Image (cartoon, rainbow, N blue to C red; front, side):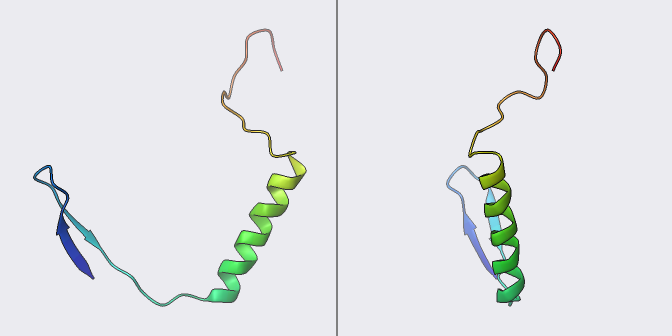
Amino acid sequence: MIEFDAGNGVRRKVQYGKTDISALRSELSRLESYCGRTGGLRRRYGLRAGGL
């Protein structure tokens, strides 16, 4: 754990720990696959005028 002053009068705290690397790789793979299916298009707005 590390604490530091963010420079604006706020103290921040970050804690690092062990993780399951294979689970992290699996999740990254899943997200990359999802991005590939959407063609890499970014969705900026949830609603559009005039329907779908």
